Length: 190
Image (tube, rainbow, N blue to C red; front, top):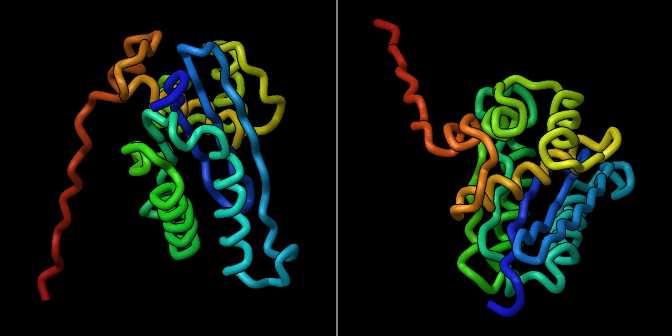
């Protein structure tokens, strides 16, 4: 690995994608956002996903061999709408990382949306504004109204913390270490 280690946070969607590169040792962060409206691609989803992949590659430029850990936001498995598209987006991002990242970070840690919110605000059901306010209060970053930028920044902070970096608060440590809750399913008798 050349240069200072970098942690990457990805809040992916075609409606608004955010990427943050964070280097605590180099004392900097870099955040970019971009939307991929379907109309721009003539309604062709494959072109939309390819544009997302190209943008991720562009964001990786200069960092691909310095990435220590990547955290990307997962999607809500219980969602009724858009699960297939969310899965396609996750695949586009993950396959791009595998192809373009030169370190073991190419396999991202997938963080549940509620855990991202809880890490920043202390509660798993925070609003977009609460996330923006928390990022400003905890880390001094003002992203205006860009919740994708704020989420990607929190994800980069989580990647850093997962690698042993400071969290800053007890509740953040708990978010990273608490066991996942197992859901039990009951079958209907027929």
